Image 1: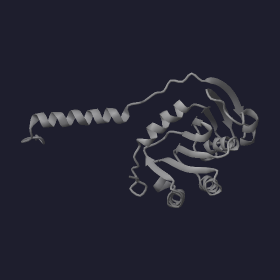
Image 2 (image 1 turned 45 degrees about the vertical axis):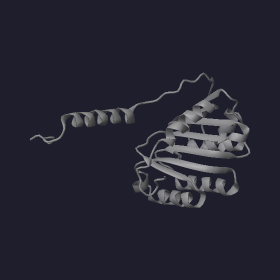
Image 3 (image 1 turned 30 degrees about the vertical axis):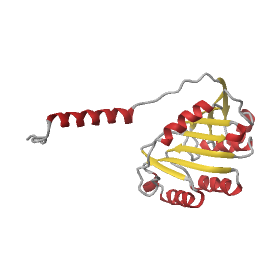
Image 4 (image 1 turned 120 degrees about the vertical axis):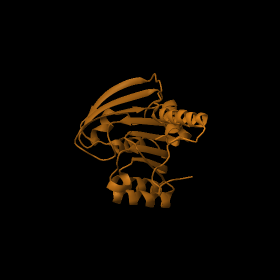
Amino acid sequence: MDLFKGFDPDAVAAAAAQFTADKKETRRAIAQKSANRHHMRRATAEATLAEVLPARFAPGESWHVMSRGDIDSLSYVRHILAGTSHLDHVLMSTWCIAKKDLTEISDWLDAGKLEQFDLYAGEIFPGSYGDEYEQMMKMCAAYGCRLVVAKNHSKVTLASNAAENYYLAVESSANVNTNPRIEQSTLHASRELHDFYLDFFNGVKSIDKHSKTK
C-alpha cells in the first residue's frame, strides 16, 4: 500500500529531506575549546571545599574536583556566593533537585543574594518529583524564575555577576541532590565558556505545557 499515492513526489522527497535534516540538527553535538590553567583537588565533604578551593576564581582558571560525601552541584553555588556580593543569574541543569535545595535558593532570592534563577530539569521531573515541581512552579510565579523541562541529563551550572565581570561555568557528574557517590566537577572562570553554555540552554524549549515560556 502506497501511503503517498496522489502526492507530488518532489514535495514528498523535500519533506523527507527536511525531516532527516531536523533529526541531525537536534542530535548534533557542539563543542567549545578552552585553554585555561588547570588545578586538581580532592574533597571528602562540603566543609572541605573552602580548604581546597580559592574563595574567588581568577579569570582563565579551571579547578577540577573529585569528591565523595555530601557534595552536590549546589555546594559549588554556595561556595561561589561566599566569594562575591551577589549573583545576577544562576542557571542549573540537572536530572532532579531536592525540595530543601529549592528552599535554599528561594532564601537567596529573598535576601537579594540572587536575582534570577533558571532550572533545566529532566523529563521525569513533573511526574516523579511532584512536590519539587510544584515548589518550583511557585518560585516561577513569585520570583520570575524559569523552569524548562526537557529530555535532559546534563549537569551544568552557570553563575554570573556582570558588575564584577565574574562568569563561571561548573561541569559536574552530580545532580542537585546530595548522595554518597564519587563525583567529579570542574569549575571554569571563563566568560567564553559561560556564554557558550548559556547560548545553548537559551535555545532549549520546555516540553512541559505548564512551564512553557514565550
